[in-house]
Figure 1: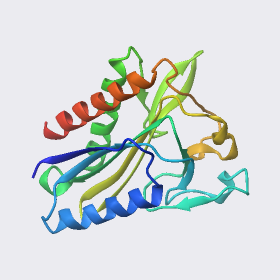
Figure 2: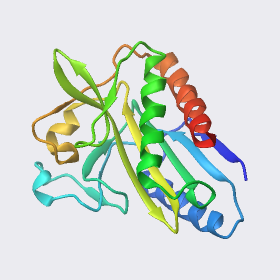
Figure 3: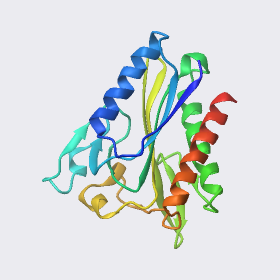
Length: 206
């Protein structure tokens, strides 16, 4: 089956997106639907993966949605590029590490098109860049694999507000910071989403 490409213009509620992904997982498991790559933005939302620690919530007044993806606590919101997917690893090598590597390479190659050097970190999953000789996170990755179907996805900080990250310990990492790709304007945001789709679909087929 081919990969369906979906791009949402308006922000998508997190729980609505999750429901859509979970339904697509079941449909693919029954061979009733295509795989999916979905580009979107969320309204301001805090989510927690299966390995999060409640101590990572610094502002106890915030609402945190606990979810099935891997990883810890993070924030999503306007100006952040979200790429969700539902990919059937039964039709590929059943190798989760290799699949994550495909995601990492796709992000890194996409950012290169905008003269942004970035790199992966085996200890701290995600994509990082150097800013004033310090490692700063620009993309977070969180997936779940069910019946060898991988879903959830990754987020890239493009022009989103960083203040919300002060309410949590993002991804449970205390000694490293987070940044945005401020040199990417809204027009380039759309070009970046196209690069992500192009690189991800290419790398999944090879």
